[in-house]
Length: 197
Image (cartoon, rainbow, N blue to C red; front, side, top):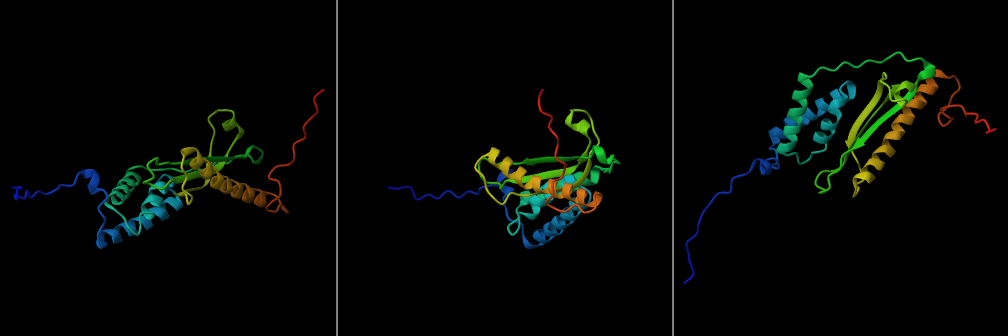
């Protein structure tokens, strides 16, 4: 005869599975408020908060416990760590554009790719491998709209978007410093290349 005994049991959530539980309405409201504050703060003066702000904002309309944990950790970190930003006085002849960009890649395809960049100005010393002053002009972190299948393609897409931010800052600089300069004109005068003897 088949056994008719039914064993009842309760599955307990592991910490990993609990991270994927959806937030209730009240928690979503709190997280939405935190995401707005993080986004504003990151745009104004805290570039290190930009990635977390973008990830948390991108979790809607279905934010989970893991997203609340990311927000809490990022806010706590910003409160504990101070940041001083300096705009250095760099002679015009020494101004050099700087772009630092990166992209994250999840080989499992669970998390959308995130990319970010820092754009600013420095001096020729940086290109020579020396310590140099850098003045940040703009920064951003956001989700890549195009999903790529490799980390190299993600990096390429990231740099493609980031270079446009560098060109925008460089164009703004030229238009402020040189009367009559228009967008689309060369950023630098053509270099004369001497012919080999």
